[in-house]
Length: 283
Image (cartoon, rainbow, N blue to C red; front, side, top):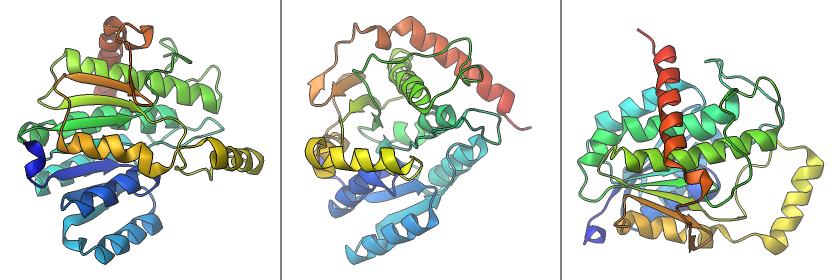
């Protein structure tokens, strides 16, 4: 059984919310965990927590701004240089941006962080994951939700922008990312698209105080505890699904016939993404 050995687990957005909770849960099981995050203070706090668990020798924090393509490539190299075998990649990095902003690469921030970094990490870590006995990628996004769409003629949302629109586009792009990975047989890993539902986690600091307060109030009554939301992730690391692609929305399998999981759209977005990355590649 794949659960009989300790694993090497990489988590993007690993210092906050569900990413942090997953990191601690896997450390408690004896795994080596590499958490990627942008905040030095949160990373340092997680290092200290790992030490309290007696796992400081098995925990590594990599500070990086994953909205920057060069930074994603850097951490990809650092991880594979140090860990030739990676058993699981858990993709959690995301941050709401109420106003449109561009990264140093000239990309819309949410698209770059929430979608493109996930595409790149899955690609960069593929050789290390192919070396594992039963690798898995868990993409924590919004599968099953049909709101929003990929704006094929304006992926960077230069014409019209709202924070919700950007989040929904990136969420639908992640749906197609999972489909493309499986359809292309892009690696040995099994791919899981996972929508945990409203969870008491995440960084609300970019939101205005009124919205932040409302979400916190709603969370008291409606949100799931983070421990409940990460339970399937923790289990998939030990026992990946057998299918190339699994889509789960709040505990229920997602109908693969949904328009948001269209194979033609998945191939179209993958091709556009590859073209975009070629334009950004440095000599």
